[in-house]
Image: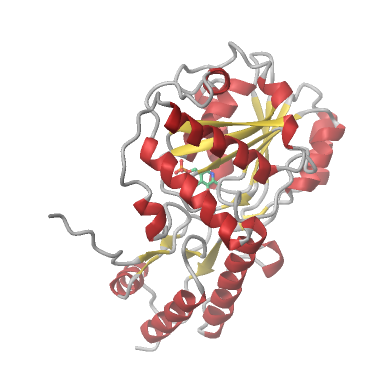
Length: 368
Ligand SMILES: *Cc1c(COP(=O)(O)O)cnc(C)c1O
């Protein structure tokens, strides 16, 4: 008989992240992808995601898409922008750059407004760009830039985008579920996130919450069969929860359990507060040890934090990583262009005692 061991370490990474035992246990049965038992789970998930995204849920609809989060981003960019459209991408990190890369692969006309990785994207400059370039039809931005932990002012950008009557696409991959959203109030037309971030499911699919009237117009626009957002949505609508092609059934069932656990915790506001308490404790604890966060506190999301390497002694990330892993924590390397840094995620099934233990472990590494 196979043994199912406990996790040897906690993932302090922004997805996949540490999930509860009960989320993992929900995967211990098989489902038929075409059967109504399974399709009813899908229907329930779609409507619960919309309700989590907005108060005006009748105007929005949710599509689930196989693959990691990037597949869902690519399905939106490739299915939403028409051949004569032009996408403005606001970039201040690697995930913004990835949207640009997608537009490049798909040969979608685009223009870029780039900011420093240590600055939030800016609504005034966005407004100026939109005023000077009337050929732009769509605007895309990342909510939490997981590269740094930066929280971008999406509602300010949304206001400007709406004023200029453009369509607004938001990658809320690493924030949705752990942040109080109202995508209608923020003028978001297409929001993308995935199963294995703040909702605390396991990896395997992403989802798109979109304005229904816009979804209805997307037939025949996609540049890829498997990432055709309209066709995927239409099949789920017409087929009452059917997916095109094989769906990640176990992952979907685990996701429903993760949604239940999010409700039990008190929803996105309560989860936000837990993550924020984790993050504040972490930053205060590491500051005392001389490890400084890259970003000023006011720009920070509670999801992930970038710390600069300590300057005063010969710091080896690999040694640090290995020492923490041995004590039960896996952290993330840095990804910021001009700084030597590492990242620590504070999302997932991670709680104050875990962060306290982490700080003590780092302290003993730094003072050995
Ligand atoms: C995780 C993440 C993605 C998707 O990454 P995958 O590796 O494809 O799951 C996209 N954008 C942001 C901001 C993310 O944090």
